[in-house]
Length: 315
Ligand code: NDP
Image (cartoon, helix red, strand yellow):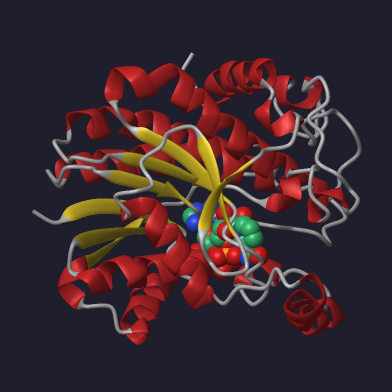
């Protein structure tokens, strides 16, 4: 049978390119889990994905109700779940004030981390029940949350601190909107959320890999300087960023190529190792990369997991 893969945020950028790459093989049915149904349908159609190989389902990660409804709808569809790709993200580098999810959490961490954490936890049972030979849970990471790299050292740097803001509810009222309890900074909030993504992948691995056989992995797909992720950035940045990445840092990767990389992590029989963070070198060969000190800190991972369980209503 075909594999079934859910990809969040498949209406543009990396998610769309990955959906296309997998759907074209004919070996996968892609569930495009998107907040804008029409946009996703249009994107799928214009990318030329074979109609029989994808379904769009509504999911707004900035609302726990929507996450729960999505999981209920998916279960009702009776399909097995073989691979889940947590890809969607928001990035608000120029925001002066925090904005919030339906449940009152700062939007970047609320969407990128908390929404995905609830989704992955609720879908784990579905994956356990699947008889697919290589089940995987992939969480898209980033180099920007990784301060052992050049790009990860561009200020403001990710830093979860003692997590007093997260523990306080990240609501900007009786707690800070930032995980470390500091003043709001949209670029840092995104980087912090990506550190949470990478920590959660490893914590899933420690808690569930042996028992379930599921492969848990993260990746840095390269700098895809042309995606919608930078839509909130100032126009000059959007103009100069792609050539800067192409010619100066040489980290640039096209949407197509990044989609092939993520599709590889989803389906390549040789990439079954669990608990790893994949990257690619200039010849586009994958390798197991090192995470920064903070992004591989076991006690921080446990703490983020435990606080997040409370925030999403699982504990
Ligand atoms: P895009 O902005 O093109 O894609 C982001 C996707 O997330 C869109 O489909 C968007 O939906 C969706 N999304 C945002 N908010 C929600 C929500 N509340 N509920 C459901 N879906 C939502 O960016 P990219 O393709 O670049 O980003 C994809 C991933 O790649 C992210 O995890 C990002 O951190 C990561 N990444 C990107 C890099 C880059 O250089 N671009 C580098 C490293 C990592 P909509 O279409 O409706 O807006």
